[in-house]
Length: 266
Image 1 (cartoon, rainbow, N blue to C red):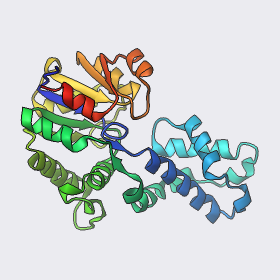
Image 2 (cartoon, rainbow, N blue to C red; image 1 turned 90 degrees about the horizontal axis):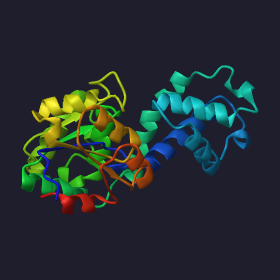
Image 3 (cartoon, rainbow, N blue to C red; image 1 turned 45 degrees about the horizontal axis):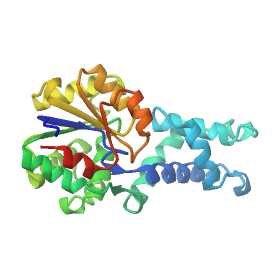
């Protein structure tokens, strides 16, 4: 059994399945932008081709991934990129993903049970993510309709920070978790595997590395855990990386579902 005082978890690919949102959102963004640039539809790759290119280009910020994928898509037709503005391209991404999120974002099976278990055991929870407050509120709000926050991300009456505070309060109260916080890219200038987001999460929860567990689907989550001095690092295989990759990156254990982690807590 595992008995942490706090779990610090990644979100996308770990708690919620956003893989299809990311892929379809980036494709629709690419297609919309270059169609507006009068690129003949016959020269715009289909989704399956774009997905292969995206897998080669993924990494870092969404803006950089969009640029790298576009350059791969038109590497034999560079004239299509001569006047491309990749910041303008990236600006299209959020509205497109917002529109398709209800269709493509899902909670991984067992998420409500895991959160209820944390409440039962008085285990604190933090999310550390390279996403923005908007992404967290949208993705988990859509994934957990029982919170009543499914449309919160669409609100124009609150700032993204205010929405995140309401989201944190609602999750904490609904699942009776003693403390819950979210560290986003707005809080930290560095990216995983830098440990800064984990360190901030532990400070907010008032826990030490020895009493904390880091949980994630990617090698950088495990590496961040090592860099932050957390002795317990659990990888999950339903997201980005396999058990082999997670273990090589420093995971001290691997589970294949949220339910498997839930059964190990006690």
